[in-house]
Length: 97
View 1 (cartoon, rainbow, N blue to C red):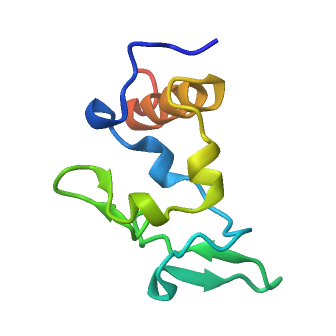
View 2: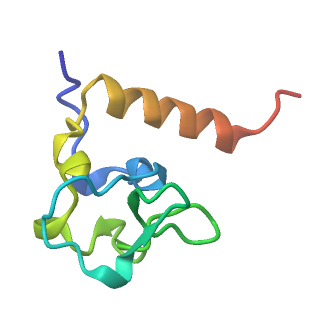
């Protein structure tokens, strides 16, 4: 079951903080990928944890039509989306006083 109130255009793009494996060729520009020590290709993440493909002005993917398969399969408003949003809120709120 999905939460129909969640829409990518008004989301905080918290899924763009996840490690994204590039397991298929979707046309992701090579300058946005890197290889881990174990040889797995991943999306580059910036020092602050956000995906390098994220347009920070609009909080949208700058390579949406070429995004990795894992990004395509993350169901907007699905269980994984909601869990990541909740985890992000907890991390941002800091320790309870």
